[in-house]
Length: 181
Picture 1: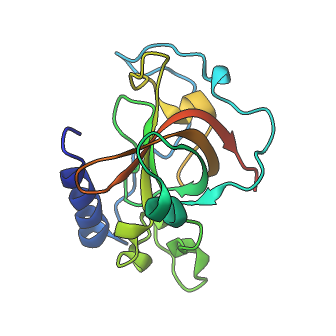
Picture 2: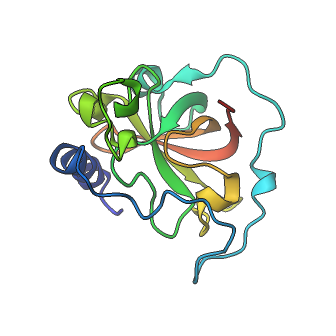
Picture 3: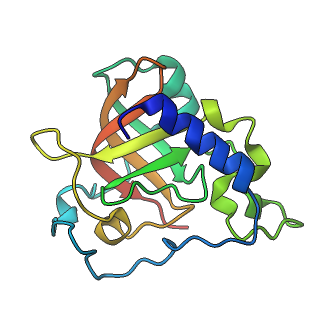
């Protein structure tokens, strides 16, 4: 989106207003068919071969990272009913300290990755991840197909921190490690 503040507000509002509803996300499947209009990208260039040691939490980096800092962070894909950026290898992650709605045994939320049980914590516990090419352009590819991820996947991201005027954290990613459950 052109204005990160609007993106943050829209993410918060969608999580708050839509929250645990009976709606389901149309992006939950990880198919191998490339979406029309998206480039075929070799995702293996971004896959880290081994799990990096000591990644920082999203909350810590939101507090400490400055623009152009090289960062290594861990988080869980989610933060709204649709954490994916349409047509781009980009998504939102949240700090592992937040509990998704399926972490509560009595909650049977159809979209637990929206963290509707933790909406008050979301504004300070999330980051936008954008996978970029050598020219710094966001890849036009589906990250679910590219990296085999889905909502609630735990990922370690390597990249460069960027801050906007509203102090939102975006990571221009150069690498990803998908943790197995």
